[in-house]
Image 1 (cartoon, helix red, strand yellow):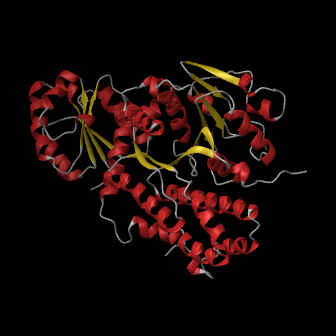
Image 2 (tube, chains in turn yellow, green):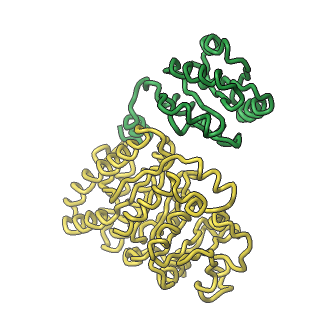
Image 3 (cartoon, chains in turn red, green):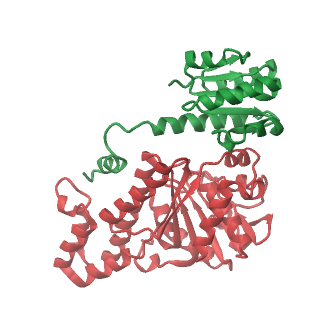
Amino acid sequence: MKELPTHTSMEKHKNLIAIIGPKGGVGKTSISANLAIALSRMGKKVVAVDLDLGASNLHAVFGIRDSKYSLDDFVQNRVKKLGDIIVDTCLKNLGIIRGGDVPGIANMQYKKKMKLVRHLSGLGFDLVILDLAPGVSHNVVDFAIIAKKTLLVTTPEVPSLLNAYSFIKVAVFRRLTFFFKYKKCPDILDLLERAKDFENYPHLKTMGGFFREAREINSEVADSAKKILSGITPFLVVNRIRTGNDANTGEVIQGLMQNYLGIKSSELMSIREDIAVEKAIARMKPVMTEAPNSPFSRDIEQIALKLCE
Amino acid sequence: MSDLVLIFSMDDLRGRITQKVLKRSGFEALLLRMILGAKDAIAKHAPGIVIFDISSYFSEEVNQIRNLCGTLEHTPVILLGDRSITDRFEGTEISKELFLSDPLDPELIVAKVKEILSLKAKEKPSEGDTLEDNLKHFLNLD
């Protein structure tokens, strides 16, 4: 029987850090790899996991060409212990798990996904960095919801900012749907459905408007749901900053998320555009090892410090 | 101001390499040799960027380039050459990031040109809505 997402299975896992880049090509994998290095240099035992299933490339950033196993082997039960597929990066405190390349694996069943989460969380690492696929599929959103910290990566361009906002919106609606189902509140679930239709229900355009009406149906459940949303606090990262205007785009998206979705981002940081990234990618080496004093590496270190606070 | 890149180099090989990589990356690039008359050429072509390959010029010409750079307030300048020569431009308005020391790195030149031209495009005053207005519109929040 198919296992469905539940409110309780959405509890946060304290050592998971999800790296999300809803718009493809925003530098998510480079950030994941180099952040994992920065954190490992701070003495944390780290494993970086390529969850861009079906289109994995994290191993390439580390210049790892051959490895015996990938996540395919675990997901398809060819390997029992997840720890057996960790690949050594030759860097102290840091291992990686290669993503799979089997077509269709990206659409993993919920039950398998939760099993994977349990195993990842129980690997015995201080931090597990999840390099997730682009897009706003439920697969990606669920990992973002259960991770203790979620880095939402965008670039200053409008399409990327739009996708970042949409991602958080999908996460908010999915999280609330689980909760209202768990609380058996069909009337509030209907209201949530109506909140997706701005044209006919403009007063539900903001989460503030939604919760006002939800309280009239069941104030206790509405207040609890609001509290759950306060736990969604994405760490916003604006990558490839060139000007002061670029840096300000983070504040704009931060404001929209707060005003319309009721979501406060925990941090807003930026990473400067840096030719060192292009060069390191061409050499299939992480920037942190190739150019440790480059602007990119220094910005990544600042993010790592903030994550450990 | 156009997106033309004006290259000054007395070294035929280095000049042609620079011109070729820029053209291959989609930029219009013109190679000139003589520094004498450079000011007029810049005024005539109104380039988006000027590249001086200073290691290919004699000391006196380097001084002329230095003086010329002081008059190019609105035209970004990239200097190519040995660090000992580019050091002579210390104290000018030219950003240190635009001193590209030898050996010649075509990839880096292209990257810098891209960076400068995209920055210039962004600095043009916006004609209309703010970023927030645009996002709200696309997200159907307005």
